[in-house]
Length: 86
Image 1 (cartoon, helix red, strand yellow):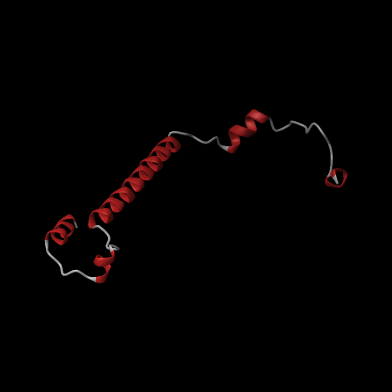
Image 2 (cartoon, rainbow, N blue to C red):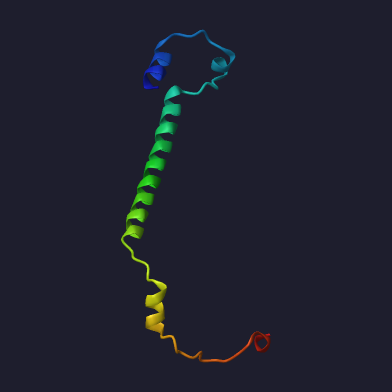
């Protein structure tokens, strides 16, 4: 890709209407845009990798461990039903 851009810049071309008006895009600008896009994807990939590493280091609690901590015989503090809330 870089060789293609350099060769396009070195070879003489006949002037076209777009060149006469100054609307032609510089091939280096296209390369810079692609490099910036690549950099954004690289940063996003690093962020996702960090999150994956962080998540893999965590161990979720099992339902049995939560039930042991809470106690199976715990009574609710308030005894209300749906109709009394409305």
